[in-house]
Image (tube, rainbow, N blue to C red; front, side):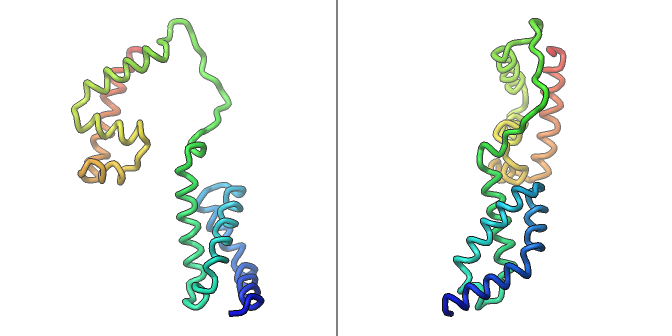
Length: 163
């Protein structure tokens, strides 16, 4: 495939499918600006693979797969997990200090049964998904959900009176 033919075919595909692909990107990330970035990343990667993909006829499926994977990669970046908040918490003198809160949390975690403690730490401290936690511990996803629910309820019962 000549370079001019390659560029023309790619441009034609993008012109025909760009709006649809942008909507898919928005559905994946929920923000129009991020969707634009995601689509741009996907189209750049598609252009590189265009000669190979064009012969197979799976252009749209390939670009969707790129968008899904790029969105997952982007969401794993640490700065994407930060969430701004308009209100800063008040610090009253009668509230425990962060060190006291952490110590109380560690003590409460140690009071949990071993499996609940592992699930709570993996799910809510380290931020793993239900599936990742289940794989890590070698248990079922339903078991992860029930241990998580019971563990959080126990932690709330222990820590609530201190607030």
